[in-house]
Length: 163
Image 1: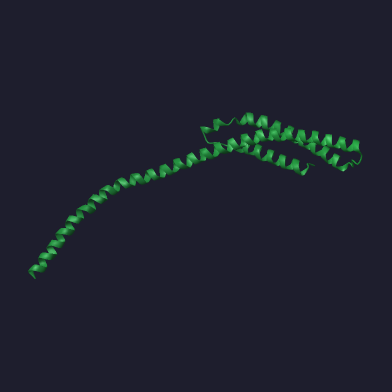
Image 2: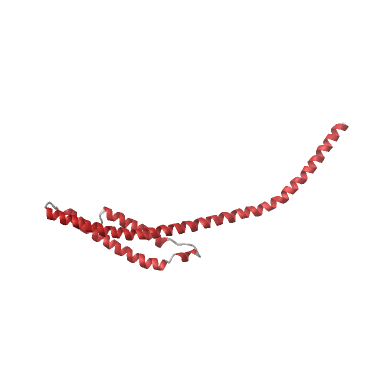
């Protein structure tokens, strides 16, 4: 069982590794991420860090169960806790490296998604531009009706004068 602090570290580690391993980019951008190397390296590192967190948690739990009332016991316990915290910090630092990589992978995926969406929007609006070209002919046809409207008005006025 992991201590609550170590559970948080492990949870972050698992989410970030899952993000890295689960991110699939479309071609040709899929070559930006070396999935084979990631799988091999991250599975191994994840397992090593999980074992280390488990060991740290077990020692932490055992130390917390010990009463350290005497000065030597208190000193020994404080020194042990300091050593445990140093090891935990080393694990956090390794997890931070993975977290930074996961952040980059997320950013790449978001950028590619954004570019693909922008491209789709451009293709959709390009269809509208083609349709707009047909409207030029319609506008010219409507403009010719203005001349007919003026002629009809003149005929109407002439009819009133003659009546």
